[in-house]
Amino acid sequence: MAVSRGRNKFSTPKSAGLIITSLIDFFSIVVVYLMKSYSSEGSILTNADNLVLPNSFSTMKPKEIHVQIAATTDMVLVDNNPVVPTEDVRKIPQENPNPVVPQLEQALQKTKKQEEDMVKLGAMNEMEGTATIQIDKNVEFDVLYKIMHTCAMAGYLKMNFAVMEREL
Amino acid sequence: MGQMARKKSVEDSEDMSIDLKPFINFLVVLIPVLMLSSEFAKISIINLKLPEGRGSNTEEAQKVRPLDDESDKLLLTMIITDSVVTIGAKNGFLPSLFYKEFHHYVAAEDRRVEVTVEYDPKNPGKSVKNPKTGKPFKLSERQEIFLYVADENYQVQKCLYTKDALMLTDADGRPMTSVKTGDTIWLVTNPRRQVVITDPSQYELKPLMAYDEMKNRLMKIKERYREARDADDIIIAAENQVAYDKIVQLMDVARTADFPNISIAKLRG
Image (cartoon, rainbow over all chains, first blue to last red; front, side, top):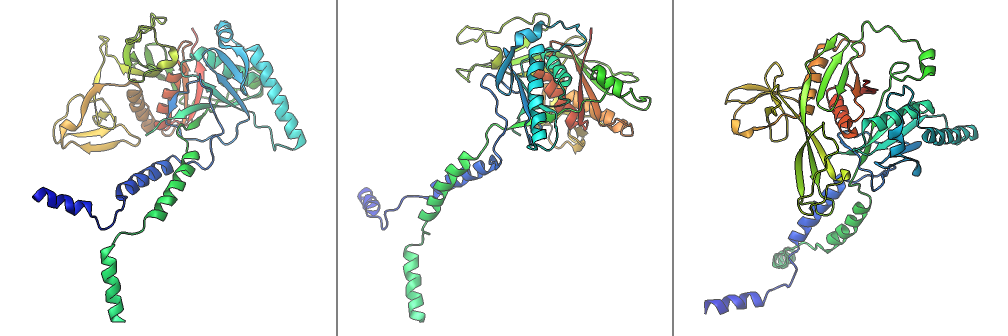
């Protein structure tokens, strides 16, 4: 008896509406979460699939990228063009006081020339000479050192390391 | 007039809910817009400040700029090899920090398969097997490298940590292994924070991370040599086979300890 009365009460609701409160709650949380990771600038640096960048607490954002050097565990790239296998970089003797990677130096000299031409044409204000280096976190220091040295020899004296921002 | 108002309020009370449809429509539009413009993996940069003349051994640079007088400089250097991290300065070296290295692997095809193994620097080529497939892990599946401080018997040293991974030290900056209610301790953040213990069970005894101890030591040096001309500079010197990840972590440590001008050097021999 009591059961049937209860069913009657529910089968004839006064307004057949969705329970929307929980949906709104959910949406509000999603909106807040998305706002947290919102960026108006987008990202000007992208990394290759096989390149795992190290995590860091740095929050400094890249403003301009002039030349981008990437070193994965098997290839060194300049502006996304493969230049020299990383294995060849490793083969350069470690005792060498002047460890320059010839192919990389050539590629960098070419980009430097392009940058200088841009300055002459007035497309750029001044020669920046900044290289952004993306290195796989499992690559050893030896390769990093040789790449940095080659950058310096090719005239890129300012260097930045790209890292993946660690979530706090 | 009064009658009408009363009538209206009676109607309202029958259907009290606000019309949420436009709001939901708005949210449905807003969410895709935000999703499109949000960044989930943020890439940032670390600025290197390479010293001019010194450090870079380009002949040109050394000719243009003679080495300046370094008598009042600190020349702080952090040295990392495959089992030791040390801080050195012009006047000498601090005691070395021996560490044990642990590698944390996560399988790429199944993220639930996780393994943490001790790494033997004398046997670098040794591969770690995936327990599920039996195949060795790839290098790109190495998620994290943990460096734990080892004592003179080559055992991992422990230290108390807070829930948000801050190291506890005493007033002299030594890591603490036990506390009781009423003790005064210092948390290794920059600047150091003094805390009086109210509930010792809040703190966990964990292996002491070499990066945390390094930060602790660097902060002590910073407090002492604030006057030096190169008080913001640090050189990170590494051996050839040290993984790039460790160098970036040490750069983080240096930056959080207030040494923003980081340069990199090679350890010879």
